[in-house]
Amino acid sequence: MTAVLDAFARALRDLFSLRVLWVVVWPMLLAMLLWLALGITFWGTFSAWIAQGLDAIGIQDWLTDLEPVWIANGIQALLHLTLFVPLVMLTALVLTALFGMPALIRVVAERDYPLLGRAAGGGLVGSLWNAVIAITVFVILWVFALPLWLIGVGVIIPFVAAAYLNQRLFRYDAIAEHASAEEMTALFRNARGGWWGLGLLTGLVQFVPLLNLLAPVLAALAFIHYGLARLKQERTSAAA
Image 1 (cartoon, rainbow, N blue to C red):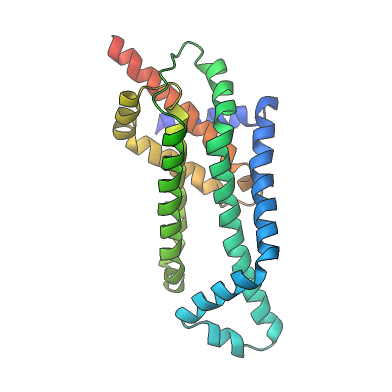
Image 2 (image 1 turned 120 degrees about the horizontal axis):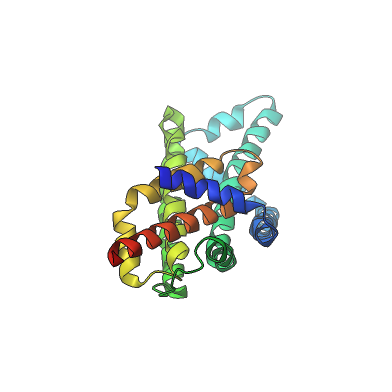
């Protein structure tokens, strides 16, 4: 747990450096603009999908008969927003993982791990495949959680989903440049508890208003620090 908290603290330290600030801004801004454009363009389609989902769980008829009408419209708008925010966050996380990580890795490696050798055990194909798996499982968890909100249990699943997404999405790219394929496999297996702990910690940030705007890059930095520190420790132990 100490290693997880240390990685998180170092990520907070690096978050506001000038070299990191641009990576903080552009993935979130691009994700917001993308889903805003899609939301405006396909508002009718999205509304129909939501209505079908509500009808499947028996709520649509209640909304239709609800008076005054503005309350029903407000609830439907809130449902749109409830879906919009996770989509923006998911998109920003993926953009950061796929395109922002190289710049963040340079910042962290040059400052804290300048002597750590690079074995290039991962690559673009592996990163893309890892992202596909992470997104697929995340979406399945969210869809599974929707009907469970009615009985209160569903409130837990978004936190589990966020923890899974972060640890699955960022752990690969965090060490892909420095670790060999064998080292990556070993770290994913032996440090599973740490990856999940950091995933949960950074996932919680995504549910804090305003602070969640920084969540993608904060998560990326934390996983880079944790992964490179563990890799350095493993290599030191192996050499001893």
